[in-house]
Image (cartoon, rainbow, N blue to C red; front, side, top):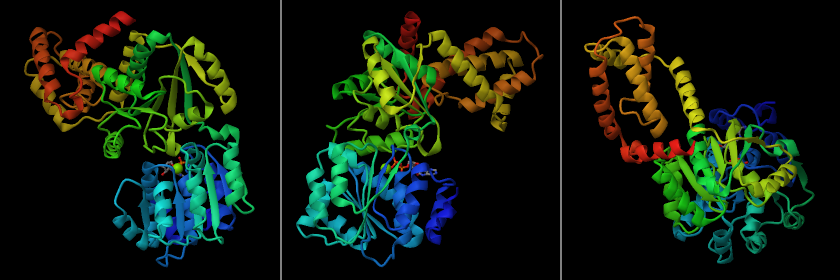
Length: 494
Ligand code: ADP
Ligand code: MG
C-alpha cells in the first residue's frame, strides 16, 4: 500500500513524498482512512510507529487553512510538543498550515501571538489549561488529539485534561493515541470520544520487529564492566542507557566518562535549558551515549539510536516497551540489550509473556572477542572504501623510507589501536584515508619487504601521539592516560 492510496490533499501528499515516506506504517494504514471518514478514534500503538503522521496527515488534509486554529494536539512534555510540532510543520508547510508550540516555563506573550497565526496548536496540558482558563486565548479547534495519553495520565494530568475539554467545542473530531490501554485511559475515552473506532496494532506488531532483543545475565558487581565491554563490542553509533534511579544516572555518567566515552545524563532535576542543550548535542552527535531515567526520556524522538541498554531491567513491561522503542525508529533496525542479575530472570520471563516476544540470551563477550569483532568490522570497512588522492600522496611520502607492506602493517596498527580505544571517528589522520592506504598497500604487496622497518616503527609512535592530540573535540575525552588504564582493566577482566 502507498500513501497515494489515501487520497490526501495534493499539497499534503507532496510533503509526504518530500519527507521520503514510501510505505505507511501499520498504525497509519489503519488510522488514516478512519480519520478521513470523520470518526473519533482510540488507537493503541507503540512509540516509533509513526503516530504523528497517522493523525497529522489526515487532519491537515481536511483543514481549510482559513487562519483559525483548526487542530489542537495535547502532548505530555515540552520536548514532545516541539517534536510533534516540527513534524507537523513539515507536513503542513506546503498547505500554508502553521503550527504553534505551547508549553510552560516561557513567557506567554510570544506563544499567544503564534497561536493567533496558527492552524494547529501543539500544547502541554498545564500551560494550555492556563491559557484557556484565563481567557488569554479562545480557540475552537475541530480536531482534537491526545497524543501519548497514557504518559499524560502517568504524569498526573487527568484533571487538566478534563478541564481543557470544557473549553472545547462539542462538535469536534477527537482522536486518542496511547501506547498502553490501562483502565484510566478507557474511562477517559468514554468521556471525551463519541462512537470511537478502535485501532489496535496486534501484539506481534506492537513491539517493533526490527528491534533485536537480547539479555545478558551478570552478577550484580559485574554490571559496570559488562556494560563497558558490551558497548565496546557493539560499538554503537548512538545509544541510550536506561537506569532506574537518578543517582544511578549520575554515577554511570561519571563512570562512562572516565572510561573515555562521550556520555551525558538526562534526568528530571535538570533545568529545561540544560535538557535541551543535552538532547540537541545527542541528536547532532556531540554525545554518543545518553544515560537517562524513564521519566527523563519520555517521548524522546532521536533518530539513529542504534542501541538501547537497560542497565537494570525495568519493573514493568510498559516501560520496557517504551524504552526499547527509542531504537528501531522510522523503519530502521535496532538492538535492545538488557543486563539482568540471576534474581531478575523472573522479570524477564514476565515481560516476555506480557509483551508477547522472546528475548535471546547471550554471554558477555571476552576481550578477545571484542577485538576480533572490531577487526572484522574494520576489514569490512576497508573492503568497501574508495582510495583518495590524499591517501595516495601520503603513501608516496611514506614510501621514501618504507616498503609498502611495512606501511600497510604500520597503518593497520595505528588504525586498530585507535579504533579499539577511541572509537571509530577519532583517528588523527582520518580513518578513511588510512584505510585507503592499507587497501592500496595490499594491492601492491610484493614490494621491498625489508626497507626501513625499525625506523618506521619509531616514526609511527610519534605520529600516533601527535595525532591523538591534534584531533578535534570529538576525541577530547579519551586521553592517552585513560587508554592505558582502560586496556589494563580489560585485560585483567577477561
Ligand atoms: P511515534 O509518535 O509513534 O513515537 P513518530 O510519529 O514520532 O512515532 O515517528 C517516528 C519516526 O518515524 C519519525 O522520525 C517519523 O518521521 C518516521 N516515520 C513515520 N512514519 C513513517 C513512514 N511511513 N515511513 C518512514 N518513516 C516514518
Ligand atoms: Mg509520538
